[in-house]
Image (cartoon, rainbow, N blue to C red; front, side, top):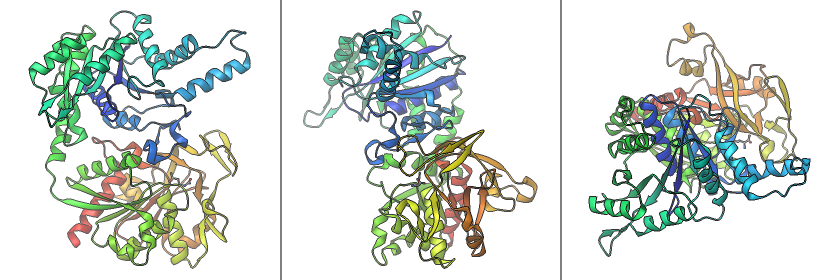
Length: 551
Ligand code: GLN
């Protein structure tokens, strides 16, 4: 039997609803249940793929090539369950499907309406591909009271009646602010938010009350009384020093016990939280700090690099060090000598990005890392910039560039117009739609025996015994490093150490005579987990630790 937990939010956004959902998923898992997490996003974009990272944060890519909300990254990092296309939907996608049906005449002349057509499509999405899963946790984006989210709330309300009794639970996350002038925590916003939710027919079973101070017992009782929930169902959520403490903190507050009791599971299996305790221990007792500079373009909003920041933290955990991140806007390196600012960092990371602005600054950062022997990690765009750097400054091709910035004499990075995706041939043109047309999702890559990356993926094992490995990583890009420049670049020390299985697409480059200089065309940060740090991040931070010790 599959049970459904719906998580809504009230009062303000950014309450950590996604994290709370992920943490609850992890807690249910720790008790032996299987879980899947889903996100319903009320905005009109078909997916977040075309939205600016500085507005919406990172676009999280799944193995099956969906461009999804960054909360799916939290879900995966906390539960290890790979997300799928079917785990994230937006109003835009629901309408796109309904309107396509309407045009085909599938509604046989009927009037197409929000209720029942839109709500039915939302319900179908929630109930789809759930076989064999004990708990589906379904988070509704936005805040109760938004016009946009009404159809979603109506759909989950209906599900409470459609599904057998005792198979659904509703959790509402709210804020209990502390008013300095009064010296008090205030429960009124929570009361209003629940009133709003009840006015559309949803009585929450549990309230997750985010607060910056302890909510005294009498205030918790008051919330319970005015919001019509049990006292034990008022769960306080205090800020934690690390997001990986959140599962333990919610467990202490009794969240998982309360959830199970709503489903009538009064004596559930004891949770095994050893994984989370170990992670907590590793974070709270670092044996040093390494400084990593992230030379990017969307540095104003750190959510734009959510998975990247987390993967670096995981790399730190693998080496028992704290990772201090310095976010640097790459354009600043376009001033003469500005790049000297990188003096003293233990590692330089150039992340994914789009468009010409700031690219010369990223190339300057790659030059600095190459010449000064500082560990360099180029991810997607960061790999492409490292290739341009080597072409210009080592291979003597001063006009080398990417066709993403316009035509050039030496297109060392160019648009791929055709590539094979398993059995099918994919094509793409300069003027294609922007949405959903990149090389997206999981693709294989053959590592070259004897290369640094082969050793990294073999977890430091002796490369000669491990053979050449085939790995699989997630992609999201339109341009590719041009294989025709392989010979010229390898002659000057930039090795193509990972290629697509057919040998046509460079996936990884590395500098031979450098302590750690690796560029990857994919996004390894998307698959890193606190309990399974990605080998590239673990190895990059290890190299940064060596660098720190040398200085
Ligand atoms: N803009 C580059 C491309 O489309 C890199 C994309 C990325 O870094 N994700 O290929």
